[in-house]
Image (cartoon, rainbow, N blue to C red; front, side, top):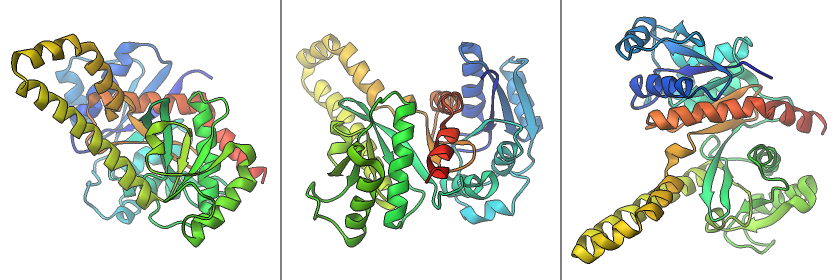
Length: 334
C-alpha cells in the first residue's frame, strides 16, 4: 500500500490549532512517509497559519469545517454538530476519502464519532482506547484507557483480543495478555473479573498470562494489560504523574547538592536525556480507538507539535499494518 491518506482535526486539543499545524508540517518536511494530509478546520485560519510559516506542499490539503467542538462540551452533542472539525474528520474516514484520522480533541467526543460515524467492527460491542505505556521491556499496551467506565466480562475478553493484535502490530511476536486485578491468583477479584479470566483463557489460550497487578504495567512481563476504562485511565494518569514526579525530584536534588551534584548531573546528562525521552508521552503520540472500521488515533488533549507528529505516525503505521483488517478477520471468524 502507498499514499496513506490521513485527516487531522486541526482544531482539536488544548493547544490547537498551532501545534496541530506545526506537527503536520514537521512530518511532511521529514519526508520519510508516503502520506497525504488533510487538514480539517476553519479554512481561512488554516491557510493563514500555513502562510505565516511559509509552507505549502503538494500532499497537504485543507478541508473546511466552520465550527469547533469544545474540549468541555458534552460528548454526545458532537453527533448533532456536523460542521465541527472533529465530525468532518470522522466523516472523511466513513466515506473512504481518507484511511485514518487523528484528533487531540474531547476524548468522549472522539469516541462518539469513532463509534457512531466511522462505525463499529461487526462482532465488537465496545470500542477501547489502547495506549502503549513505557516499560522495562519497551512498552505495555494498556486498554481500556477511558472509553468505557463500566464493562462486562465479554468486553474484557474482546479488549484482550484487540490488544493482542495491536501488540503484534507494534512488533511483539507472541504477545502475552494480562488482566488487571488486585492479585495474581486466579480466585482474586470481583465476580466480573473472575468471569473475564475464564473467557480470556478460552479466547487466548497460552497467550493469556493471567491476572496482573498495577506494577506489572511497568515491569513489562506482559505485553498487554486489560481493564475497564475507569481503572485504566486512573492507572495511566498515575504513571504519567509518577514519571513527572521522579523527573522533578531528580532536578531538585541535583540543584540542592551544589557543585558536586551539578557535576554529577552533567556526567549523567545523556542517561537523563534517554530517561526523559522514554517517559515523555509526546514520544508515543497517540492511542488507537480499537474496534471501529477505520484507524482512529486519539492524541493527548495537551499534545505539543511533537506529539501530533507522532500521532500521525501512529495512524500511518496502523494503516500500513492493516490493523482494522486483522481485527475484522479475528471477530468475523468467531
